[in-house]
Image (cartoon, rainbow, N blue to C red; front, side, top):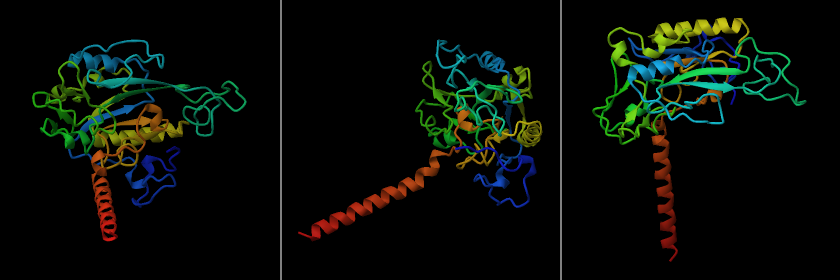
Length: 317
């Protein structure tokens, strides 16, 4: 499903907040989240990422995480591959195939487009990030976090900065939180049998320091600060990118895209220029808990139907 182009810029949301765009997005939800007062988080601008992986190194160094099992993946120049128990920041290298620039400014007429029907090589390149996309991924610290709701021991808490933190001395390694994350972030560690993920450098931010990844980023692709400030900056940046020709730029992690399905937005959001699936992100994520009631009603309906069939069967004898 293509979410692009969005007909109005996020910074130009009309007063009628309940209006619905032609792409199924509620215009009043674009560029907004339900972050609590005092919330802090990340804005990751993928248009500024150069793929240096300094954020990955800084994260591992500060949090004393072991190295990954490097190997030949045969799928990408990226050798750390994904987020995990020992990789809390991961820079994805997304290589797009060739093709001429389409009306939306992307190769082949859309993100990830192949060659033309005639099999011709590219004749024109997009304004920037020709055929490569870089994205530094991280835990999204959801406004309503599925992992926290699923934790039976209270090990996962929300800090005073509105971030989501796993207390390692309380986690019992049950793993209930793992399938409850729509983004597949938490992971059980083979070293200690507990679940680990990004802490948003709580030990640094709690004393007024920047998270290690944001501090190490040489291009300010990763920015840390109050959510309100970051979201306003993201809306302005998206508008600027579109004026300069990147017409596919949009915010991922607001109530309209990425922060859907009961999450009410993400405290770690992104500026993207291709559909979410291109970056291995879900287009319409939702909390697994939101499916509880429909599943319950289905079970009750099936039980009633079987009961009725049994009654009719017995009456016929």
